[in-house]
Image (cartoon, rainbow, N blue to C red; front, side, top):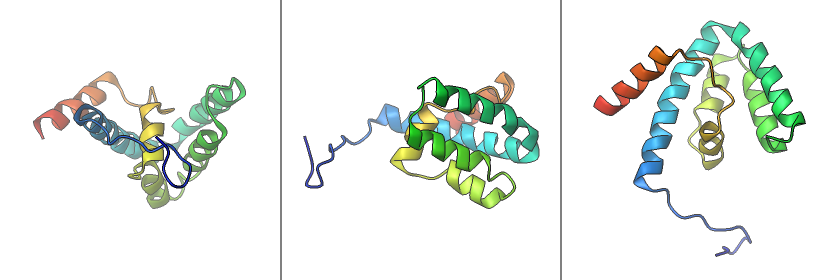
Length: 118
């Protein structure tokens, strides 16, 4: 179904998708803090981003968005705001995150278990 502006209208997210998005947001909050504390972790991410883009695995808008975020680590509030933005486009980017390998499995599990109990 198309809306008046010609774009496809989206169905509201299911409860499962909303829960998944909440978990991803919680994980990305910890990732943000870790990247801000250890900005040297960004260089391999920029290389991974470039490789994904050159391989056609990421669209141009996603490439620009990730690149601009990763180059804002010297501005913590801008970086946090961009990464944790509550918009459909950022939820989509977090679902296919570039930021894998930043958290240890223990950190990941701690966030997910606190998300469940909280």
